Length: 77
Image 1 (cartoon, helix red, strand yellow):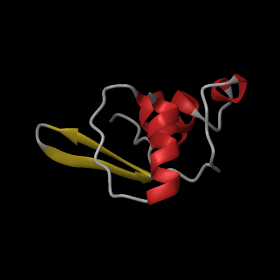
Image 2 (tube, one colour):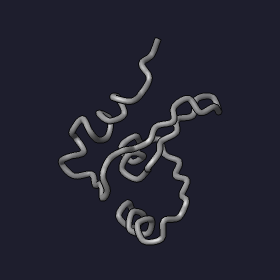
Image 3 (cartoon, rainbow, N blue to C red):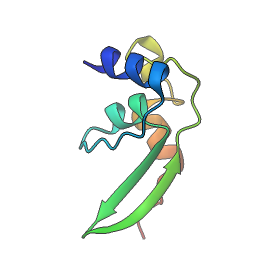
Image 4 (cartoon, rainbow, N blue to C red):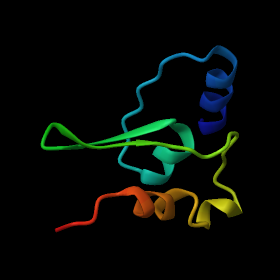
């Protein structure tokens, strides 16, 4: 399913809104990640990783997935 979505987006460049609870999926598929807390946008991050992206071995690197998220996410007070 991820591959199909990525292929369609690469060909047609539509605007897509994807709602997910999976950080890795958001970073894999998105160019921008928004985080909502109590209905308000609390984080707005561009995803600056080269395409195409996949869940291969590089997804465990600090530049992808939760490692990428941790490097950009605000630290709790």
